[in-house]
Length: 244
Image (spheres, rainbow, N blue to C red):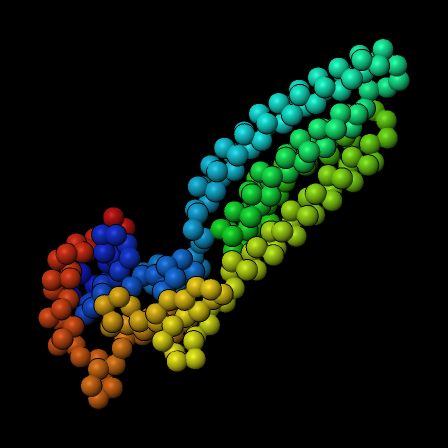
């Protein structure tokens, strides 16, 4: 099987070293990935494209719901104004249901901010601003070009964006905490999650940076046993070239 050295298994989860199959993912399956030459930082449970798709879908839902909220609110406020004999000025807060409905517009941006921060390790803030903060930024731009004193509206939008970034920072720090070795050295632990340090076949141990062969008798890896076990494994996993 040495002619297959330097190939991934068909599912991309194993790498053939020339003598044995090495896992191409760390124990948690996502914090890093083997490129074929080195370990690179991994991503979250959602890919960037999946995150963009979810953000666009929820953004469209936010747009539709915002239209309904403003339609319902303005209709009720106008009805109250008509009932008063068109006396005074219309105020969106005249109707008791206005504030609760307007507050529901904050739910989707918060959800998107949490997903972005948990899925993007380094550039989480870009996901928060672009996918979650755009409604507040659009509101601030609209308020800026609206005649009259809109300082309060612009400040409210800024406070909400700052709140989204704060939520994102907290979620990112929790989701991407460092893995630590358990006291017995058998598991990698982060928060309430833990994984064995050994691979599923028991022949590799994760040291925090890469997989190391588990020593056999006498401190040496039993290559003869590896060769015997590797042949059926390689046939089952059907290795393919890296560039394929």
